[in-house]
Length: 341
Ligand SMILES: C[S@@+](CC[C@H](N)C(=O)[O-])C[C@H]1O[C@@H](n2cnc3c(N)ncnc32)[C@H](O)[C@@H]1O
Image (cartoon, rainbow, N blue to C red; front, side):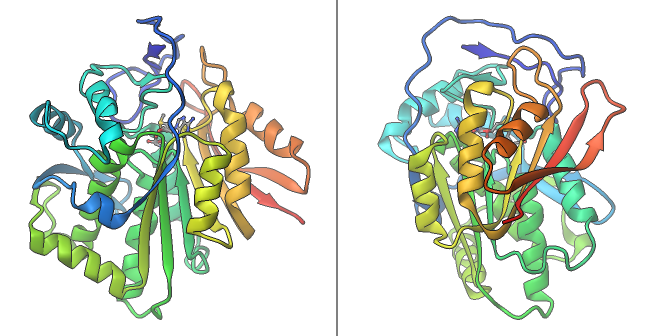
C-alpha cells in the first residue's frame, strides 16, 4: 500500500491538516526486510563524490546540515542501471526509491526515511534544552527508524564538541537503524559526514547551503578522526523484531544508554515490534525517548497506544510525557521510557 500522510513532515509540502492516507495502489505488501548489520567501512565507500546540503537552524546554537532531497533523487537517477547499492539485494529497493514520486511511505517497501519529519526537530529541541551534563554519561546511543537522523546528529555533534574541548576520550558508540539500507547509504551516513565536516570549522566559516566535495582524503580523515576520538558508528537495516534485537545486542552487548525514535509509532501493525526492540535494546539504566504525533489518523498509531503497550509489558517499565506541543493541528509529544526495576 502506498500513501501520503498529509501531516506536514518537515521536508514535505503538505499542510498540517490530517487526512486519511490516499491509497494509490493495491499491490500486496512485500516480505519484511531481513535485518542486516553494516559497518562504517561498508557504507563509507558508497558515499557520493559530492553532497548538496542545507543547514537546518533549530536554535541560535543548534545547526544541523542535511543532505538535500533533490540531491538524493539526482544520485538515484544517475545510478539507474548501475549496480551500486549497499549490497546486491538492495538493487530492487533502490529502483523502488527512484520511482517513489511524492509518496511519504510505501508499506514494507519504503517507510519514510528519506525526509525529516517534524517530531525529529522536537526531539532535537528537547535534547538541546536539557541542562548541561544531563547527557554526559551517555556513551551508547541507538536511533531506531533514524532516516535523516536529526536527533542522533545533534548528539553526534555535541559528542564531537565535548571530546574536542577537553572531555576525556572514552568510547562512544552510535548505532543508526533504518528499515531501508538505501536510506542509510543515501541520507543517514551523508548527514553524519556533514555534521563531522561542520564540526571541524569555526561557525562563521560554514556555508549554510553548499556542495561538499567528498574527496578520498576527506573520507580517510573522517574515519581516522572519529576513531582517534573513540567514536564508533555502525548501522542496521531491516525490519524491527527479534533478528534486529540480536544484531543490536552484538553491536552493544550491555545495551544502549539512550534509544531515540521519532515518528516510528504511526502504524499499529508495527508499534508492538518497535516497542519490543526499544525495550530489549535499553541497557540497565538506559532510557528511551520517542517523539510522535499524538494520533496518526488513518493509520491507527498513537502515543496512547504506544504508552499502553510499554506499560502493558510490566517488568517496571514506565512512560512519562516530557514535552508536548498542543497548539498545533495534530498535537505532538515526547515520551520518555525507563525502567524502575
Ligand atoms: C516516518 S519515518 C521517520 C524518520 C525519522 N525518524 C524522522 O522523524 O525524520 C519512519 C522511520 O521508521 C522506520 N521504520 C518504519 N517501519 C519500520 C519497521 N517495521 N522496521 C524498521 N524500521 C521501520 C523507517 O525506515 C523510517 O526511517
